[in-house]
Image 1 (cartoon, rainbow, N blue to C red):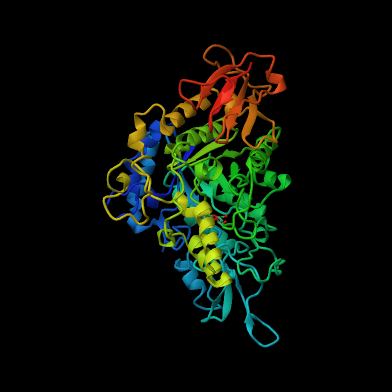
Image 2 (image 1 turned 135 degrees about the horizontal axis):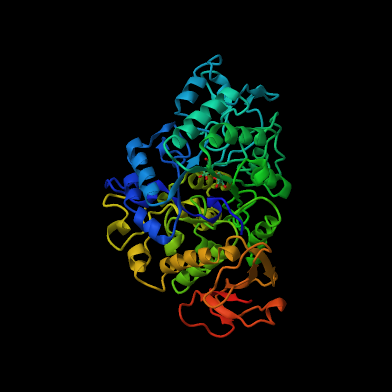
Length: 585
Ligand code: TEU
């Protein structure tokens, strides 16, 4: 394939600073802890580290509420630690992207403190303030009925200046007014240029389609007035001036630095034409986006923690859409199954039963490493970490989204035991907390994460699942991931760039697809011959399944390239949660 930008072939590893490695013994992960693990990350085969917010923050939303873009949350370290991290990564030939959280900031940020101090403060218009409305009985009302992502109204009343301010997330996360050019310029300087000047290589752009608000704030169509958590999420997205703002941001704050990598968080954007406006190369906005079609399967539509039934076809539809959609366009995409907002993929899409957990981990790894797009691995995914057990009490869950949902259910159901048990089932299946239990390094106290009292409970299975136990075990998820990352790069024209074709879609146990060379690709050498086409067979069930052999593969001899069953495979029967790749021509 002709020369491609570096970020297409990069493997990105996401680090959640609070839960990765604590070097100070205060029970909170920190930057020096991350620095101490860079050789581990490098050895895995990673090119880029994505570090979730480490900026100064009151931590209402785990750092996605920033009170100073130009400083570091004290328990994580300081600016000198960040300089050391950037340098240590670059010395290893790796890169660093930070989280760009610029739809909102913390209510503790100096800018917001000024803005809320009076109606005529010069920064008043840096946020979105609106006067109250009144109902027929003279009761004060917020400007509209929109509900925030973390519960309650998107409008918070400010007594001092007797106006409401807008917040799509927590009330401690006031939304910026991106219509104000002065605000945009300040954001570009403080959140972007400050870090690019320090040598940061790019950004994961938080809530990238929410900055432009609708001109008016019409009420959302509330289908169920009794449900306190109706929220207008789709109305928050893809506003009238979003592309103007993103083009300006890239042109003014990033282009002067050369090749800045950007990956946008793009939920609620099903329309292919709209997606192209964000990531088509000719638009010069974002390099790529995370789509959430896969990780959202099974989440409630009205409220994410009321799970809805799905089967493998929904997952295959989600993935196939993006694999096919990008072909014959000038856009790019991502391959991921986990992040800090998502439950663990083994528990969500395969099986975390002890007898199937490792095999599930390897099968999912085989899927992710053979799909087209830039590959993202979330901390702990490489060793097969799984969801929090159902019997943990709510107190062990720290995420405000989890806590607020539970409180809303209590209020709505008047603490009905059956309803509350269902709420706990939803939390135990989908909560963002599942991704935030401390990284499991070894079987010593607190899994080697901290010698202090961890801010969040370590998973009880850390003695069975940890880096040290897997680093020397050839059959472990960790070793298999390492092998797959090399395998993917060796055959990058097939697996990073190749053409995806799905077969047997109605099968709810098997995911079968081929990857074939694009016309202009030069085949890479397999072990024995040029490989132009690979057949990927994934068993997402706990039952042996006969491989599905596509018509156009039957005339060729199949050569086994790799299997999650190290060493032995049983003819054309896939074991439970087994994955295989065959060369077909
Ligand atoms: O996520 C925004 C987002 O779409 C999800 O958080 C979603 O709103 C939530 O999971 C409910 O479905 C980004 C960050 O990834 C998230 O951690 C932050 O909480 C949020 O923005 C606010 O910055």
